[in-house]
Amino acid sequence: MKLDILAFGAHPDDVELGCGATVAKEISLGKKVGIVDLTRGELGTRGSAEIRDKEAAEAAQILGVSVRENLRFRDGFFVNDEKHQFEIIKMIRKYKPEIVLCNAIDDRHIDHGKGSKLVSDACFLSGLRRIETVLDGERQEAWRPKIVYHYIQWKNIEPDFVVDVSGFMEIKEKAVMAYSSQFYDPNSKEPVSPIATKNFTDSINYRARDLGRLVFVDYAEGFTTERYLAVNSLDNLL
Image (tube, rainbow, N blue to C red; front, side, top):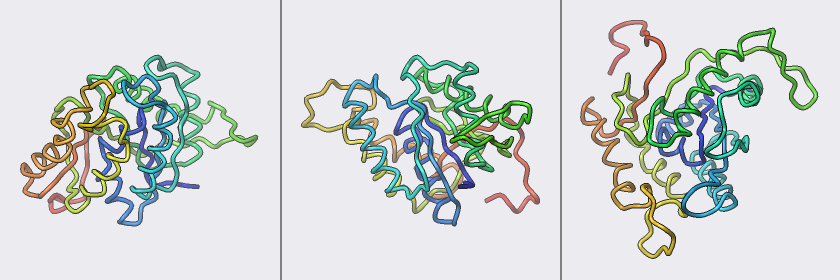
C-alpha cells in the first residue's frame, strides 16, 4: 500500500498529541496516512503496554488512518544505529510516503530527540539503492520521501510553519483521550505524571488556539523542517 504521509512516533500517543489534527485534516482531503510507533511505551508511568496497544488501535480508528504498526523497539533504550535504521527503512520502502512526520528534534523525553534523528537518518538512507532490504520475502526498492517535518511536543519550539487545523481539534482531542490510561483522571489511583495533569490536558487545546491566534485562524499545529520551504507563488500563503 502506498501512503501519502507516514507519521512516526517514539511512543503511542506522540503522533496524536503532536500532529493529530493535521493528520485528520489531510485524511479529510483524501490523503492516505499511516502511523508507525517505535515502541509500545512500556516504561510509561501509568497503564501498561497491553493497555496502550488497545488505546493506539482505538485512536487510529478515530483519526481514520489507513494503517498503524508498532516496531516494538525498547522504550527508553533504543538507539540510532544500523539495526534500528534498517527497520525504519523497511517501513519507508513498504509504504513509499511522499511526506514523513516525526518527533520533535529536541524535547523533554529523551526518546523524542532520538526517534526524530533515527527516522530522519533512515529517510535519507532509504533512498540509497545499494542498501538492500527484504520484507516478507521480497526485495524492496529504494525510496526517499520528498520531505521530513517534525511536529512540536512538550517544549514550545518556534515552528518553521503552522497548519490551519480549525475544525479538526475535536477529532484530535478525541484521539488523544483514547489513551485514557495516560491522561488526567481525578479518580485514578495511578501515580501522577507530567502528562497526567489537568493543565496538560487543557494545554492540548490552548496551545493550538494560541498558534492559530498568531496566524489569524482558530487553531493551528506547528512543525519544523530540515530544509527551506518553497511555494509556487506568494499567494500560496494564508
